[in-house]
Length: 139
Image: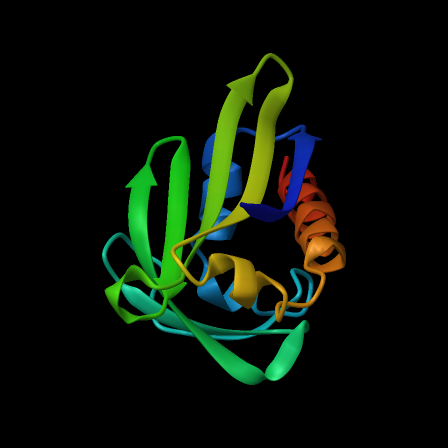
């Protein structure tokens, strides 16, 4: 079950986009709807992030997947009762890159829990716009 997703065509190489997405300080500068990140964004590392969506709540996630074209942050409840996954996908194109981000939810409590999650679409749009602007400014 997906609650929010965005995509952007960005006139920048994938390595420029990944450098931004892996930089906790840059992601939490207010441009990307994230207000604070604790920890290092790297494969198998745990991070905590605070978002404009719910600024008083920390979201603990693990960087569970990182390949040249994909990263996934996983979080949720014990025993798989509710699992949230944020997917970042960067694909090279003739003019730069195509970026996609989506959030999916799984587990027996997913239906109930998703009713409690605020609308993430505006936050996702801010991430997409911020990433496009920051990456293209580096070209």
